[in-house]
Image (cartoon, rainbow, N blue to C red; front, side, top):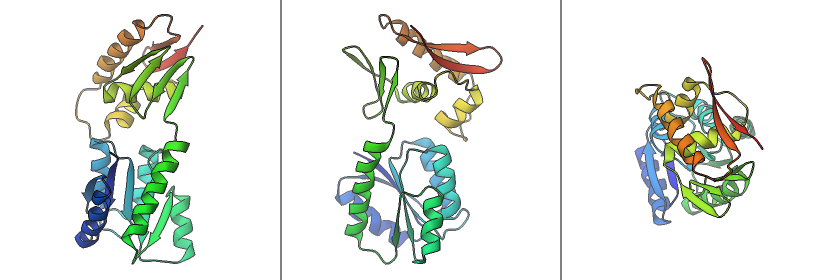
Length: 226
């Protein structure tokens, strides 16, 4: 079941959109402004966001830009009362994947959501290959030879991030920010704990070519060898 986020300062519109999306079997979360939406995306996995443009505190333009910076693989469907071409172009330039104008047919919106989710699963990097090791984000599983091992969410996201840029050094702060979110209040050493667990898992795989290397004073990177 996909997790969708509906962001609009009009509770009636949120209720309308949520009603039709829930009727299609989606799990729907709501936010009344951009800042509340950011909090939602940082505490749970959101598969797609439907966001209004004209909102208090943080408008849809700023929200779209921030969401794409923090969650580049998350599709965004923008909803606006403005039908001018420049507004559509601006939304698409900021990273929006589709654009719907109010008043809209709720069934058309649902169809667009389904199309975006299909496109997302086809185009997004849901599977990363690190040597012969595969990371399947559809199932949050590590695949090695004929073995599939499900990983806890944060461990998977951490390994997925490192494997997406092999050889690149990530600081603890960068990993905290991108995996746990900006509002995380715990100790940065939680990264070390998760790295330790991942190393133990990788060590259990026969002839696994992947290793996580510590760069003292800098952070961590993933290396693929032999």
